[in-house]
Image (cartoon, rainbow, N blue to C red):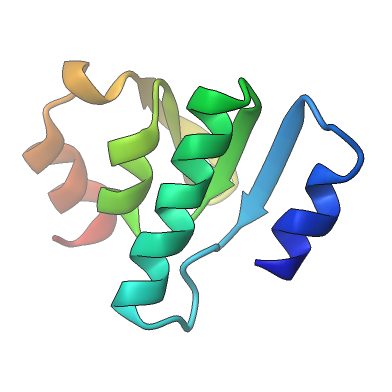
Length: 93
């Protein structure tokens, strides 16, 4: 959270998060994602999230990309996807 605060000091238009949920307790992950959502909606900051926590990331996303072996294999909007097929094909869920 300190890193987020430091980034906000420069009044960014874009914040990029790399694995914001990695190694954190579920409660903390929920809090971090709530903060990210507020930054996006209340401060109108564009947010780019790279995360393996697909469910959390999709909950916040207006658009997403799935990369496989370094290439974009799927892109879309969360409400437009066949989520079960995508999750099974690319994430083994």
